[in-house]
Length: 218
Image 1 (cartoon, rainbow, N blue to C red):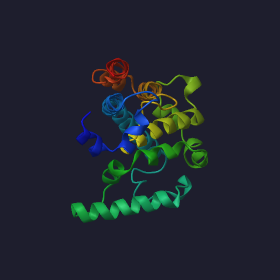
Image 2: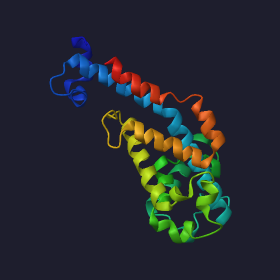
Image 3: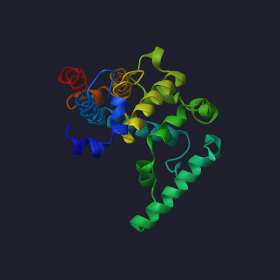
């Protein structure tokens, strides 16, 4: 690692990648590997987010209406923060696109955390205790013993933590649970929603090889 690169990244940025007794070059190699890991996680996180978003949208639409995002039903008990977020997105879309925001416009703009929050217990009365078991509708292929609101919320929260660390360019190589374990959780949830989607994802997902080979390359 050249002095220019060290100055460019800063010693503070590289410190979390350096174990006791290691050189700065090894820390930089691990930094590079960490970026590659983050890149390799994009396909699985993409498939998870899109599938979860659409699954929840379909389930909530069946219980209430197809425009539930634009007019959040009182019974759903959405937080004031979430409702304000939707209103802000509507105003932003109107300003940028020049027409009133449609359901799909707002749907596509809402972040992962918005969807994960629906698995919190506060949504039991307004969502999970209504209709014909929305969990089954969303996670048709998930093993029954794993298909509980509590377990899904915990597992999605772990994925959210990993995703947020990637978004903020933070280390993911030494997380607990490991990035590899969380990646496997991601794959399992995708498969729980759609076997076909999991099969297509497998064609482009290279995270496991990057995770294993990266350790050898440092």
